[in-house]
Image (cartoon, rainbow, N blue to C red):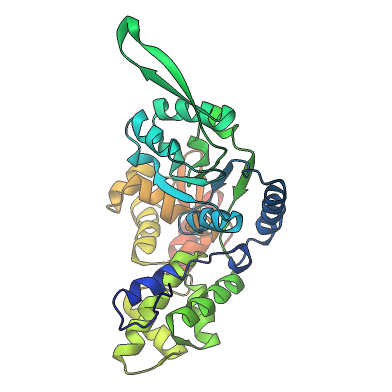
Amino acid sequence: METSLDPQAEGGEEQREILLRPQLLKDFQGQENLKENLSVFLRAARERQEALDHVFVSGPPGLGKTTLAGILANELGVDFKVTAAPALDKPKDIAGILTTLTERSVFFIDEIHRLKPAIEEMLYIAMEDGELDWVIGQGPSARTVRIPLPPFTLVGATTKPGRVSSPLFSRFGIHLRIDFYSDAELIEILLRSATILGIGLEPEAASLLAQSSRGTPRVANRLLRRMRDFAQVAGKDLVTVSVVEAALKRLEIDRFGLERQDRAILESIIRNYDGGPVGAETLAISVGEGIDGLEDFYEPYLIQRGFLMRTPRGRMATGLAYRHLGLEAQWKEKPSEDQGILF
């Protein structure tokens, strides 16, 4: 049955948003080395009619870990089940999913570093031996039953690979790391998304949006949808450079993709802590941000773009941060031994 993509049709807008995610590996933009290796593993698994080896995917939020898991299932032509580690509270939760898996299906667990020990131990046997250990009864009459499972592929995704235990990590046969995207890759993603959403997008406008998207497809697509709103209200059927410039100014997003909270973090380090070093917990409290949000969302991009340094003593603002915020005079007043390179 065909799905209508008419925005006036019931559910049409939701269908368009879902279709922004690529379904096949050839449509997944960027990450060329990862895709080349993965295409080999997929082809080998298909030719042998076997389940793909278990896959561990790491990287910052919004880079396509969930999308990639769905692509694996589509490429293999198998069922796809999705859950998140925080949703798995008791062993029976994971057991209920594992016992309903079909042959060679792909089972995706997001935030796998947050699995509880009892559930993690149950996964060891399921991944390695293809069986599920289950305890029947209580006390002296309790006994363990091993339930055979069909061959399956577990895809575990995390933004914090260092928090995944060694026994669990070692049971994954394929390790993938998704990195931030280049501007050129984000432009291709934006142009593809604009076509799906039915939005006119100037190449120059796409370039400006890419520069402001933090190297992240999720952010790029979110900004594109907001540009569509501004263009529509302005009575335009094309997202132009002028529309993007005006919209980004109203959204308080600068040419590096820094939002108000990014700048607040850098300003807090500079103004309140003399440029650092300052501990993560202290910094999080000073800007009213949770420490997980600080470490998972803000810090990776600030560090990658050279605005922030993470040292054994704490976080420090770089010369580029001072310059970007117009605080170069304060940088020049700092003792020379505390200064890094002023870009």
